[in-house]
Length: 239
Image (cartoon, rainbow, N blue to C red; front, side, top):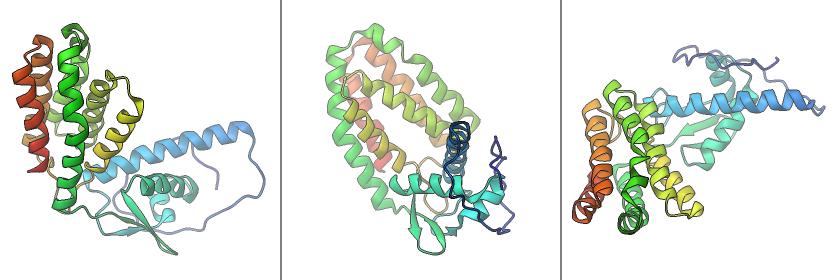
């Protein structure tokens, strides 16, 4: 079945299965570009489903069934799921599909602790060396987290939250640090059964408010307040 150019809206129901098609011929360049685009859309849709809890921790999903839900063939779904497996969001179940990873409270606390070990020293160093005007440029990213939190949109909040933290760490100039920290951040965002630590809108709003307060302290170069806010931000993620 040919790939559709767009990915359909996520459909929680529809457990139909269907046959899979493979092609031995190498597709032309245009087909490869379209397939890559569809795979990216599928990956985004699956990440959104994970954050919203539409893909249930502990449950096994097959690529054909997920393809039916998204209106695409099994191939881009399988490729997207392989990427999610590398990120630790799912695990491969031979001959069945992919099981959504179950995050324990302890695992989330450990992820938050490792993030703190990486990010807190960097942030405190940047607070002493980066001019206040540079922090002001990040205000739109912090405001984006506030908007997403107010709407209660967990998937959008997850993206804006990571974008804000990436931009802050990027001022350090160490791309490897940014990539490692972002991977840890993403792993910490998959929900627990019944909802993760940022499942409620009030939690999102409080977390976003910390972003704004931290930026204001950084712009003012108030190091004592920065240190308190940075440590509280990660302590809250552990609790």
